[in-house]
Amino acid sequence: MTTLTASPAQGNAPLAVSYKLLLSLYAIIPLCMILQLTDSYAFGGALLQFLPSSPSHFIIFQLLFGTPHILASGILITTNKEYFTFYQKKILFMTLALMLFFSIASQVLSYYVLYIMVASWTVYHVLKQQHGVGRGIYQLPGWAFYLLLWLSIGAGISVYMGIFLKNTLTVQQAEWVKQAAGGLIICLLLCTFWCQRYVKTRFGCLFMWSNSLLIITSFYFYAQQYYFLAILIPRLVHDATAYVFYVTHDVNKHAGHPQNFLYRWAAKIKLNVFIVLPLLSFALTFLLQRYGDQWVDALTQFFFGMEIRQAVTVGLIGYFSLMHYYTEAFTWKYGSPYRKYIRFKP
Image 1 (cartoon, one colour):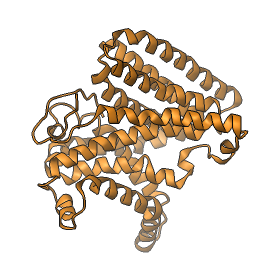
Image 2 (cartoon, rainbow, N blue to C red; image 1 turned 60 degrees about the horizontal axis):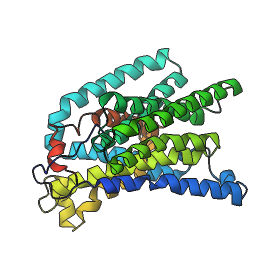
Image 3 (cartoon, one colour; image 1 turned 90 degrees about the horizontal axis):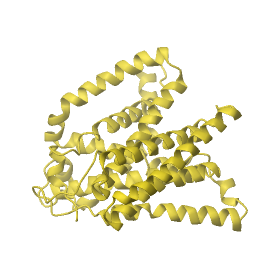
């Protein structure tokens, strides 16, 4: 999601995005800090022994975070005919580009190089969204905004690599990654203090610090080996922020006057417009994660006598994820048809 600044009501947009609501999502940071400190000092790390090394190891986490908001983004752009028509050339171009890239890259690049490339794009997407939303609030000079953004991205990538590649790194390599992350975190901390002078409001300052703490606390949990919490914090804030925009958009566009088949069906069964997109995206996530690979494997075995492993959970969902990173970079810009249905509370 690109930079989103406050704007007056556009078109039919009675429901406004609340910056206070967006800021409240960052409450996960102090809650996780309290949880970790309580576990460390009161329970001797009992929770740490229970938590997996990554949130993705919990099936419930996979069903709640990541994939649902990615599918919601895809549903939004494909079920509204005017949006798909408006962006179809870009979607086709990127689909062909991804097919060409991975068909070549899989032959010449190692799995770990591809993994690092995709992971880096993931971190960039997550943090660009949060800082993009915040930019209109703290209104930093351009150089200061991009300084904080890229320090956050650099530190975030280092933390991500340290967590998800820890079993493949040597002891020395793991230490280098941790030191690189730590150095970037110190720079981020100092620069956030420095940039305070350019923020005119207390609320803007609080939002800026919340975005910096998103990565600073992730590094802290990474260093303390609470890997689950290190990934949970940015993931939850990012996904929930995205849903705030998606649901606000759909309420403003479809409430009382459904404009696509999805919301016309929902109106017939009297399904509240607020829950249509979340309900559908979570249901699709469950079906794809739980049964997708089995269904595709059964079909390919029946028709072609061959087995295709993880065609859905890696192939299809991977494609949706990369397309999500790509399309979210422009679908919320000024001039986009999406923006007719988005406004902000001052």
